[in-house]
Length: 267
Image 1 (cartoon, rainbow, N blue to C red):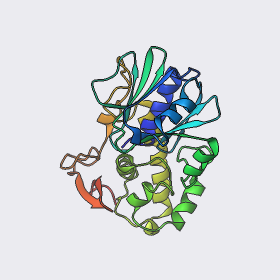
Image 2 (image 1 turned 120 degrees about the horizontal axis):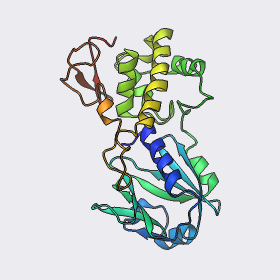
Image 3 (image 1 turned 90 degrees about the horizontal axis):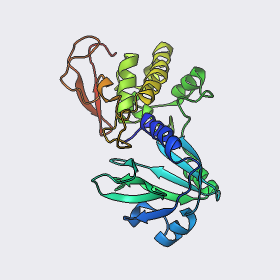
Image 4 (image 1 turned 120 degrees about the vertical axis):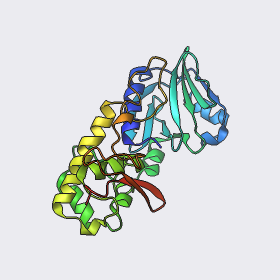
């Protein structure tokens, strides 16, 4: 599932390609991917200009000139492709901007909903703070951690606790901080919490800069998307040598989530 870096990267790409452009046509190939009838969706979306694009956690919000918004959540397996022609994959929704088209692929669980501004705010009201926000300080993070219970991995992927971090980056954050994801939050020291906060502020921006981990290109000549994939130290590296201490990477499950870590240099 795309996480904060992938969605921030998509936001940047969409700002370069569709911001301030007008949607000239809509094609819905899977009605379950939208939240209203096809005719109602078309009526509210066609001829609208995309005035702004925001990322909120793992969601993207496309603001339209009418005041409505398109709320996108790619979920598991979802991705986008922009160009004159579509990819050789099944497309669920297509937004056209003249001769160019934005294709939404793999929206079996994901969605593109048309909402009013207030409906969007209500839909996202339970999200936790953005971990890269200037308003989110180390002191705030430590205070939230003191009130949290359960395993560290579970806390990091809890979207009501922190928004945007998922399975992949939670493991990488724990590895960077040299803290086991299996640890209970209430037993972490202030130094360990500080290291976790530092890892969040290091790994996520780097992943954004390198284009996230997704293999699927956004455009035909896209050379950036997926650039972070070779930089994962522990996620899906079971049995490989830890880049820090050469000990084999282990895999276990925490709350039914695959979890990867080094049992030698994470404590």
